[in-house]
Image 1 (cartoon, one colour):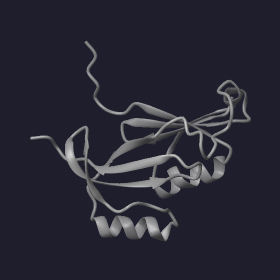
Image 2: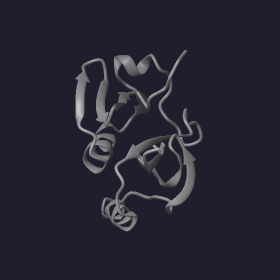
Image 3: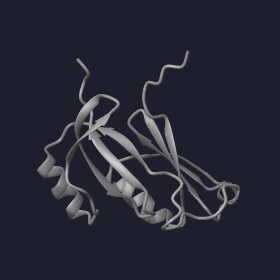
Length: 135
């Protein structure tokens, strides 16, 4: 039997490595864990990883075309985050020029809770949802 404990990793393809690193490393606070010369940068996101592959690298060329506006290979992914004041988080995102939705009640791995959607530099949709223990 398989028992899922959380997000392990998500692989994102990019033509804008520096902008992607700025977003995930500098804005969202995911430190770089590993960088491989084949074109892979791995960032730590809690107990999961976000892998960023440059499309013009040896590894990236194996994956096909670069991301396109109408051709995303993923709808969105959700990162569980430590609870934070919603107004402070929105102000933080605004300060970094990150476009986002409003907070809304949505269903996720821990049940219903409030979350916010935003876009990274390649147009991938990222949902941020505060982690709330399940009683």
